[in-house]
Image 1 (cartoon, protein in one colour):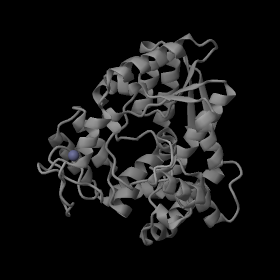
Image 2 (tube, rainbow, N blue to C red; image 1 turned 30 degrees about the vertical axis):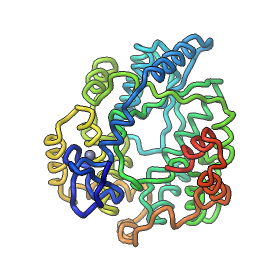
Image 3 (tube, protein in one colour; image 1 turned 135 degrees about the vertical axis):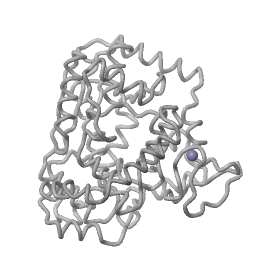
Length: 385
Ligand SMILES: [Zn+2]
């Protein structure tokens, strides 16, 4: 595929990704690399479907109260996933929710309604608020865009811990290539890097966090190889899209749609609607809407209209949100303004898995072809993202 050099203010003719993604490239027709990658990510071969069906059959036959685990956030993907797991795949999941202190009331209602209507038990893990708050302040203090990475890391670790506790070997994940395959490069980092996040915490606060569910990176790596936990992504193998999910979630679990994507969590919404675009110029809505365009959920014109309408909401619209954030994080408005005006940095400025000696050895072995492909792929999943 011949590609041109990205230039400023160029937008894809098929989706709405543009040159605010520094690594975007376009073919001779003006179609971007994300559109091409989307097609690849959504390609499924028959043997893959057969393997998926075999796995689901195996899970279904497992004895015990629960045969799999599903993380629920109150958001659309995980709501649809739980309904799909119970009603279509006939599985017996345990639902797990990680509460980082930022849930909206509507999210809590949606989660309870979902579990009740599906007859599924709910396990809630509440993160220690004082330390979690400090973790988020540490990311703000570091001036990097990775404010949501701690939540993702702790969800991942908590799911693994709960799976172990209940002797569950299969975790169903709501990630799907139909609506999520488009994302800007470098728009966030750290979701799988405890060295980076723990390092930021220590940099700001001196001591190590004691109550947050951190795990040493080498144990996480070891678990991946010998832990026996199987991650299954069922949404890839069913007809899935925003419209289908909204309709079914409303019908089956009285799910109430949020006014904005990620309205289930105040911090996620604030992060995507204000923090990232205002501070870094990254607008994740472009990626989400592009996913919906490519999946046929909305047209490109509709996506541009949504983007434009939202832009009409002036910064003062966010004032109430900023005031709430400051109160909750126990910082002054001046402190917030200071965080928002510091020079921009990225994870490369800090210690991370990538700067670890073993990672550098891994990179060397990979580039010299000395590492078996399977091991190389597994390691890449963990460290190269
Ligand atoms: Zn595109």
